[in-house]
Image (cartoon, rainbow, N blue to C red; front, side, top):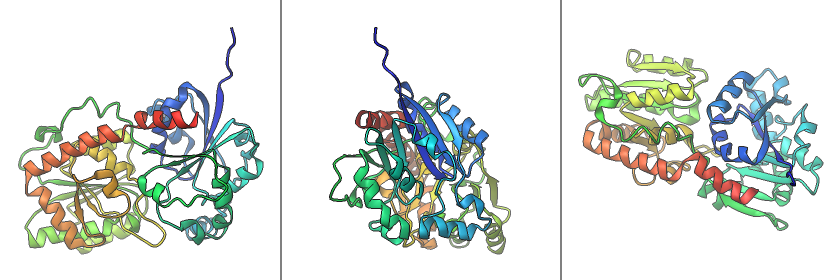
Length: 386
């Protein structure tokens, strides 16, 4: 009896990767010995999250980058997103190159160039493409020089959205495959929870409604616009609501703005929570707000927290930016990007009409179950890659 050797796959991500993406690789565990290479995160946190996704067999290796040696956040971001140098690997490159399959993200990151120089013809290169801004690579000096070479060498390019497909500019020499696969989320506990009901949030009928925000505390996520929108709701519509803010980053400027707007007693900064804790908060909230903004160099590429909210049956109010409409379809309430008045109006639509809120939330839940199950999407990717 011939025993086939299991193939190995290295999955490499840059500093502070969103571990929610890893759920899509659960179907790969049956066919590959996988190692996750990452930087900028605590190894124990990474291990715990992968175990929660059923990826107990996936090894974890934390590598060091050029950016890890730079104390200034501003300089690090410049190295990463202006020059494309910060993510160069200073160790474990040989370990990456020992695998049969090598899975990287957009060639914006420096380690893709290092891998390209060392990869053998027999090895498979998978490029997962999140980028949804046409010509983005050309704005980063070193990325522009390597992008075509990395894409040309790729055996498979996995685009995480239709927007990523539409902005993909294939080099003339590309002979591989292109597939669109949503990252999805882990649906094991969501699918069995059933439709959302008014009783599920566990709060009394006379309690103030809760608006939930989940995202990194940085300007691109639009929290400032949301705080202003809540003040507008209070002053113009006499709608009083609590805001729960979940996410890491510097909360100081947002706390100061909340105090300035006299919202200090209505806003709770809950910090970084586990995936289980976030889902618990979603069952208690009344509306999920995703006011993601636009910039010349960035727009929303997927929105894991938004998909989690959809799967929990929460109605979604969002700025109409990036891939948000592609993900939510016609069931979210959309506001003009960057416009706090428009955002306040959208939130009001949900908070003032419980039947519509329940209907939209259930349609979003069904859409999430149908389109964004990480296992279903992972199997789709596996069929193309393997």
